[in-house]
Structures are given as structure tokens and as C-alpha cells.
Image (cartoon, rainbow, N blue to C red):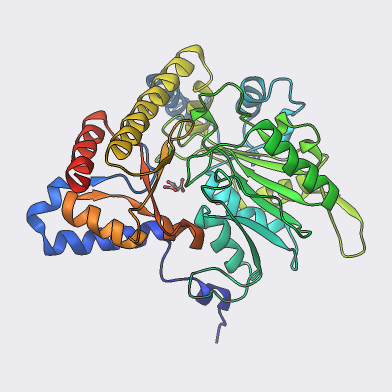
Length: 410
Ligand code: MLT
């Protein structure tokens, strides 16, 4: 009999977004006449078409695959040089990152989960609370936690609360940890960290020989020029940080799939006998064994994000979604709700009215307004009492959502 990875049984009922989908499905079964009215502001999935420059490059890539002279079979597992170089030139100029420290993949969700392959057992792991559920669930799957308690917090993880009081930027741990997950601009709270705040994290990591797993999937939405886009803007980060980035939210690649992970060769972990080993070498080995690279047409499309036309078209997409975020913020504020985020990120984080739980809020918005939001409790115990509205939508839908918010809270 094949035994299973019993750690999976510790996971709570469902991954957050499928669970939301299930509840929406149940609502539409009961209220078929209202199904067409539903507007989804739950999962942060882009809605606007792929930039023209990206589509053209992808078409060219497909045509090359149809021609014997230009056909390509397996590509380099770590990604094509043309894309790795374009990334360094456009995203990491002057930050001391080399193209061979950039690993192309099919998504940041996959990378931020798969990264645990290269870390050993027994690490003390810190996550923020609320948190992108993938960091927690993949640690549960890997056996790095005990069971969940009633609030959904897992034994063995160190949860760092992010509250209105600390501006949703966690305080440094009071104890020594080995791995720290940070996400800025933050999913779900939409808040950002200043250079000073990130420096305090890098200093902590260096002092405690810890590694920062920095998720910068939403960096393109930063509007404030003083806010860092990369952890590698902070001195010392090249010794202690790994950064995840994606084409999903800026280039609209959620359905196309392309992302990258940056691992400087200077970041090391340790063997049981204390020998230092570069993490770069382990991740490269993992990629070669378990991955055959993102597809060629997709990488061509990703590189086109950095062409002059691509940059202008991506900037227009960002402007569109940030315009949505501004409208949603204003609608919630006018409705008398406390609003956070949404100024440098496509997520608006809203406090539920006094005494209302976040799943109750989810049900209320679905039943009374047919608007799907994400309940804060789905992101962790400290998310209770809040909900997230995604700004990824058409302008018409966002304007309609704003009116419905006014009706529900009017
Ligand atoms: C979210 O809604 O939090 C994101 O869409 C999740 C993701 O990017 O995987």
C-alpha cells in the first residue's frame, strides 16, 4: 500500500480561492437569476487583454516554431539568455545582479512554494499575518509545521502580526528565525515598506544568519518614487535574500504564465556540519531536474514587456488598475469604512464594520450586492475583521461595485 504525505491532511478545508469559488457556486445555484449580476473582486486575476507588443512577440515565437530553421526544442531550464538579460537590464540595473542569477519559471506562486525544496528540515520560519496563503500551505505540505489551531494558525510557524497600528508592516521577530517571507507591495493588505523598514529586515537577516524570501510580484504598481521595488536596493540583501517576481500582474500573464526568481550567488545556507553552500547552485540543480523551462513563445512575449511599446502598454495597464483602486478606496471611505492599501498596490484592504466577521462580510456583499470580495480571515488570524477588494477589473465593473458599496452601507 502506498503511504501518503500525511502533512496534506493538516491543511484546512480548501485553498482560499477555490473555497470562495465554491461559495459563489452555491449562491448562483440558489439564485440563478442573480448569477449574471455577480462581479468578482476576489482573486487578484487580471482582466485586461495582453499588451499588443507581447501578443506580437508571442506570434513571432510561434511562427519560429513552425519553421525548421528557427524551430527550438527544449530550451535552457533556467530560461533563455535574451529574457534573463532583458530582466537584469530593465529591472536590476545597478543593483549588482547578473543574468545567470535570474531563473525564469512559469509562475511566482510555483516558485515561492517550490523554493522549500532547497531548504532542510527544522528551520524556524516566520510569516506575516495576514499572509499570502501559499507560503503557509507549502510549509504545511513540506512538514515544517504541526497542526492548525481554531484560528487556522499552524503550530511551529512564527506569525508576525500586521495591524493598523504597525501600518501592516510586521515588527522584527523577538527571536532568531531562519527563513522569513516578506511580500511588498503586500498581498493582501496593499501596503508597502519603506527603504528604512526593509533595511531593518536585511540587518536582522544578516545578524541572525536568516534568509529573506521576498515576494515582489506587485512591484510594478508602486507609485511613490521613494518606495523600493526590489529587496536588492537594500545594502547587504545580496547576502541574505531571494526575490520572486512575475509577469502576471504587470504584463497580464496570469493565463500565459511567466515569472522569475533572483538568487544571488552570494546567498548561502548551511549543511548540518556548518558548511556553507550557495543556494543558487541548489535551485539551479532543482530547476534542471524538475523543470524544462517556460515555453519559448511565452519567454518571447515576456521579453517584449521591456520593449519601448511594451513598457508604454504595461504602464497603461497599471494606470488603469490603479485608477480602479483609487475609485474603490474612495467608495469605501465615503461608505464610512476604514481603508488601507490601494495606493501602491492593486489591493484595497478594508476594515469590516465593528463586530462584523470577515466571512459574514463576504456573505453580505455576495447576497446583498452580488460582489465577490476576499475575507481577511482567509489570509490568517490577523486578517479577521478585514476584507480585500481586488482592483483587477474593467472600469465599468469597478464603477458598478462602487455604487453597490454605497447601497450596502448607505
Ligand atoms: C490573489 O488573489 O491573492 C492572487 O491572485 C493570488 C496569486 O497571484 O496567486
